[in-house]
Image (cartoon, rainbow, N blue to C red; front, side):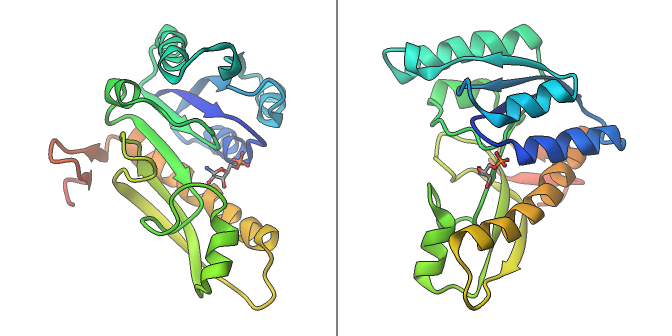
Length: 202
Ligand code: GRF
């Protein structure tokens, strides 16, 4: 499946996807797109021989303008799959509608808990004993699209947001490539009813 990965930062999830594609995950990462010119993930992409594009949101007067330019850029590649991996932009309804059913995100919490930013600090503040990460289809509802797969991790005494985030990230690097494998093998479909189906089951 021809795939684009959208990033804004470090790109450890991108790295996991690159590594797994070398081990037989049936995707071809045609390009990595970043809205941040300094994102370290761009270095990872170049090191792996993957094409990179930067589309800096700061040059656009509004969200619609940025998203239109992003859609034009994406459509040049005619991707079958678009993966948000630490892409720190809210997308317009027109954008998510265009790529319905082939646009995924990884979010560092057990959705629907802790949508939005700063999830590890908020999970610690809430005193939860179990935290984690979720792979979900992207819809116009921010971090609210149908969940495909989650990993749970314990919250341990003395955890800082940084330590907890490392524990969660290790699981992100497992579940994102796994969900992508299901999609790439044609096993995972977003139904007309808005629910994800794996092997034809809810
Ligand atoms: C991850 O925690 C991901 O869940 C969230 O942003 C972070 C990106 O990390 N959406 P990285 O850039 O993949 O290392």
